Image 1 (cartoon, rainbow, N blue to C red):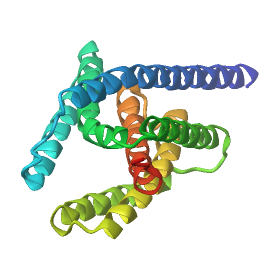
Image 2 (cartoon, one colour):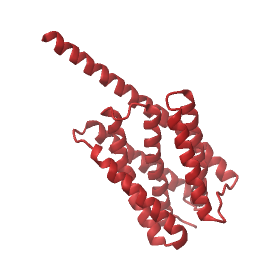
Image 3 (cartoon, helix red, strand yellow):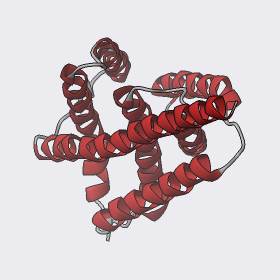
Length: 230
């Protein structure tokens, strides 16, 4: 009986080691993924990159097509080095997509300050949510389906606002998105900790999207309420 309990303890210890390794690799890859994101944003600002600016609807659909193409490629290759390559390619693409907002914010006299504030706010949100997910005994797995529905609502609202161009709806989408993707950090980090996600490339993609959406929406709100043209 004692031997059986010892084997169970050792097995539990091995599982914990594997999960900690996945989480550690996820955080490392997440940090690395910021490099092509920043490079893509910088290059997009320099080249005044515009993604179908003349036709926002076509641009929106094309963006979704390219993004889901990357998702498919990353999922198919997540157990090889190609998965990392596709992930970093995706983060570069997302940096390009962010460049228009970055360029707009840099048009303010306090633009650099707003960007650093958004970065600091995003880092704080991530740190708090990741810590809660790590130390809390509460199971957040039940949030997954509701958060997914929330993302679908945001996508539909964003598509509708391509035509409506309502500032109030844009603000509402940004605020809701920050809340939903902050909650997603809880869910995604705990998935790794509890063994629900065992591939660090897939885990990095999920958490990267959380962080990216929090940063972009927070920066947009700061630009609206704190931008200074003087």
